[in-house]
Length: 99
Image (cartoon, rainbow, N blue to C red):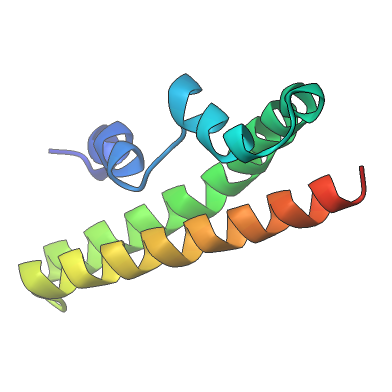
């Protein structure tokens, strides 16, 4: 199987945003700021897509080469997902505080 054929699966695993997940971080903001928050959140996630895809491709390559185990792969993916989500949430908070 070609590596690129797994890309949609890898991106989904890495937490690519769906419409519903794009709205959740904005629930904590007042109603009048939620629309702007949702717009920013969607853009932040779109901007992060290339980084997530590159990470996924690198992980897949390492896994195919046998340089990491299944357990390592899972641990590293989970750490990356957490770090990436935290980074995006911090950016959202920073941008919303400028509003």
